Amino acid sequence: MADRTPSSKTHVHRGRVIRTEWLTPHMVRVVLGGPGLEAFTAGEFTDHYVKLLFPLPDVEYPEPFDIVRIRAGFPRHQWPVTRTYTVRSWAPAARELTLDFVVHGDAGLAGPWARNAVPGEEILFLGPGGAYAPDPEADWHLLAGDESALPAIATALEAMPADARVRALIEVEGPQEELKLSVPDTAGVVWLHRGSARVGERLVEAVRALDFPPGRVHAFVHGEAGAVKELRRHLRLERGVAREQLSISGYWRQGHDEDGWQSSKKEWNAQVEAEQEAGGTVDGGQA
Image (cartoon, rainbow, N blue to C red; front, side):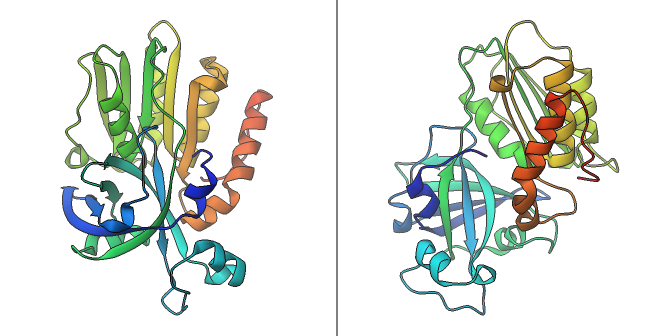
């Protein structure tokens, strides 16, 4: 995730559910619209994201809802809970914002909300943020991730030139979780079925086994933090990919909710980067 402008950090948008659609057994698409999106804009980056706001049910917030006032006047434990989701698409003419959610039953906060969302329901959010878009000067592109990175990977594929050389490796639970993607004729998309393996294991194996084409790569690698840690080490130290050619970060961490992961992410990533730059390893435990 990348830096955002001050306004995108604090301006609260109010999206109204227009429609929902189940894409796979575990992924639901929610399309938001309404006058509350008048100030929203996106499109510069293919990894644009928003931070959904879930007000605590037992806390009364001032109206109009102002995140700056809330953070200044309420104790932290009473702040709305945030959950981060990639912008799958933004249609400015229709003012429709599309978000895709991975849903695993009642687990989590945003997934169950998306599963049960009905037209007319409203949700508050901040954003967008983002920093990655495919470099048109790159000789080829590597896109790698699990379900959490699938919306950004799909958006990146749609933004590629028709003759772009792309290797996309996407890990999902099984064949039922695959999506039909719009890809350049020169792109190679490989779906990796996790089955009972640890999340990210198949992805790490596939990237390690990949025959890298010649030339300068521009890589987008996101997903579960433990797998990303291994892939960062592999790409930086074993493949010699320069830092500026990588967009790489853990979107989530096994065993942690977003609140726990985000509170430790900056320090954990810095430790990983420092250890890998020194040519060593970091004991991050089960990520």
